[in-house]
Length: 222
Image (cartoon, rainbow, N blue to C red; front, side):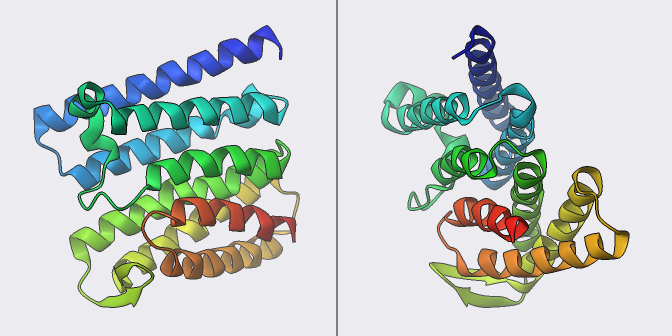
């Protein structure tokens, strides 16, 4: 592994730690809703992950980075001193969801499946970063019409927000990275948004953080 890759791994780990500590401090200072804090971490982590295809030329450093990030998250959950400091940012109220662990695992596997291709990696990551956050926040704030989903309930409003943001994210990503006619890009973005909305509705207890990007990458390959 090249020295530059090692430095990039260390840089990403430092940025991730700084992001987590910063959001934890913000949560305590402003008494933020825990869901907002978690989605800030979700969005910040997703934005950092979007730079991986340009930082690393092979999957090995990304897999190492993902493994070290997983160990860090497990340490935060398992070590009382760390959990007291930043645990509220990564834990869910019911303690039964491991969305943060699924997110990190999916990022490493997505890079491996995508082969470092910016299109195959960035479009699913954009959707995971923005559409999933939009669904959670809109559903929590404006959700009135609930329906049963795997592991609990979701809202029509949240699912609608997911679809709209997934379509927008896919459309932007395809326009930047794919050499396609505009009408083809539009139809592909609509199809991806629709199918991933179904995946998001079916997934429960944080597993959407894993299945959304992996399914999105496989759909783009097709």
